[in-house]
Length: 194
Image (cartoon, rainbow, N blue to C red):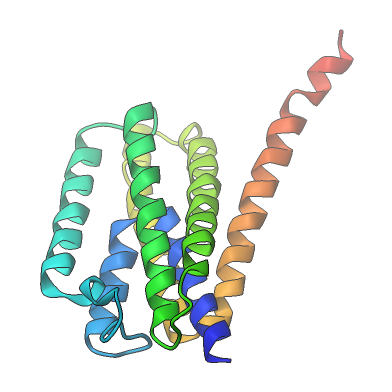
């Protein structure tokens, strides 16, 4: 049962990391350092709760926020690819670390972490791309703040109540499927006019 809860916990953290990579990782590490909800001590992933790693995540949050205030990264393909790569790696580490707390068989966390982080990334990029087109420039600048909040809530809920990670992942899957369905319907009426 511990294995399932650890897997669900990691799944939710990784999905939140897909939304925004650094703040959920920082939250998970800070809570693990205090042994609240998860603990990486005594595992190969103990570095995830060490002060140096947490400081690096804090700096990364600040740098990403600074860059996003200066320019829109959503249209920059290389920046999006780098953020996706970081999210995948951090997601894999968090799921594997969560599982390693109670089991030596942590390797499925690599697969689950990559899939969950990829789902979070795809769902929120699609959502924010649709929302961004409807907002003025000032409102668009607040979108990263909303994403950070959603990621923080998703990670926190998943750490403290692991079964609720299913709701986090389900909501992201619903967003992704709904966004793709709407994209297909957008031009359906235009095909009829031909």
